Length: 310
Ligand SMILES: [Mn+2]
Image (spheres, rainbow, N blue to C red):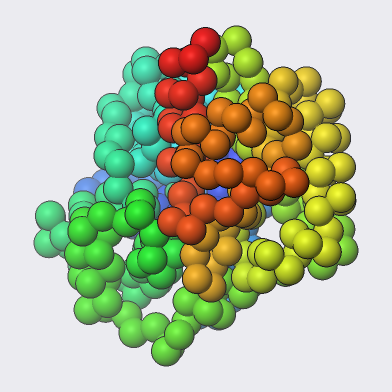
C-alpha cells in the first residue's frame, strides 16, 4: 500500500509545519500509512522551535510530489503550491483561510474553519478522540497557536484557539516568555535577509481582473526598520511587481511587541482602497493600524471593497 503524504504549502510557516507533523502522528494511530514531508524550506520560526527542543527535523522533498494521495494542512489555494501538487490527488484539506480555493480540489474532503491557527483544528481532533499526543507534537502545535495568535494579542484568535492552547499546556511547559525567543527568531532582517524574507512570504491574489501582490513580515522593531530602509522596501516591492507581472503591490509589517500593522503602499489608487477597507490613513505612503490584522484578514476586506466599487 502506498503512503499518503501530509504536507502544507511550499516553504510552510510554523503553523503549516506543526499541523502536518502532528496530523501525521494522529492519522498513523488509525493506520500506519501516512508520512509528512515539505517542499521548499521550512520557515525559521519553525526551525527555531525544532532546534530549541531538539525535535526531529522535518523531511524536505525536493521534486514534485509523486504520491498518489495527498492531505493538505494550513493550505487551500493552488498558487501556494506552485504547480508541484496535482490538485486531483488531494483527498483532504484542513485550513483556516476565508480566501481559499477549496472548490478546486475536486476529490478532497474539506474542513475550513476560521479559527486563528490551523494548529487549533488539528489539536481539536486529538481532544475530540481523547488521543494521546507526543510531547513533540504538543510543543509544535502550541508554539504554532502562540505564533498565529501573536501571543493571544490579535483579533484573529478565537476562544477555540485559547482552549486548544490550554489543552496542549497539559502536556508541555514552555520556558517563561518563550514567545519572545520564538518571535525574535523570525525578526532578523539584516542585510539581504530583508528582501529574502519579503520574497519568501509574498502572496498574490486575483481581485476582479486585477492581480495584487501582498508582502507580510512579522517582526520586532518594525517601525525602526521601516524608517531606516523604506526606499529599499519599495524597491523590493517594485521588483516583485515587475517580475510577477502584477497590477498593484503593498506590504504589511506586523509589529510583534505591541502588535500593530504598518502598511506600506506607494500607489494612490490602492492606498484609497486600503484606507476604505482597513479604516486607515496613508501619510507619505505609510499607514499604521493600531488593531493588528493578519494578511488572511486583510485580503477579504480589500476584496470586498474593490469589488463593491468596481
Ligand atoms: Mn496558518
